[in-house]
Length: 121
Image: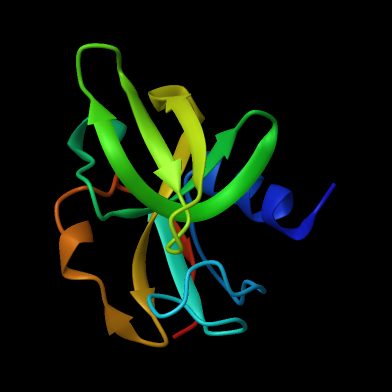
């Protein structure tokens, strides 16, 4: 079980979680080891450009919504470098990134579900 799997379990359980992801696939939106906060999300409210915590084909990603299919209740997930991870159903989208290094992501407003918080203050 990877680090994102542990975060996913907490977010799926209703917690808002702060953590520091590694990697460079989301630069410049998220740089490796920046503090991100992810909150439970209403997947039906997602839009292109939202950063979500989602499972696609068995792997968990903190990546961008690149397309939405409201009728099919699914979203397409991609990194910020043009690689498409694939489509995933709403029930596999666990959270939305609400801030990066303390800077709020304005697109997340109104898309979170009421939840507890494990986010750093």
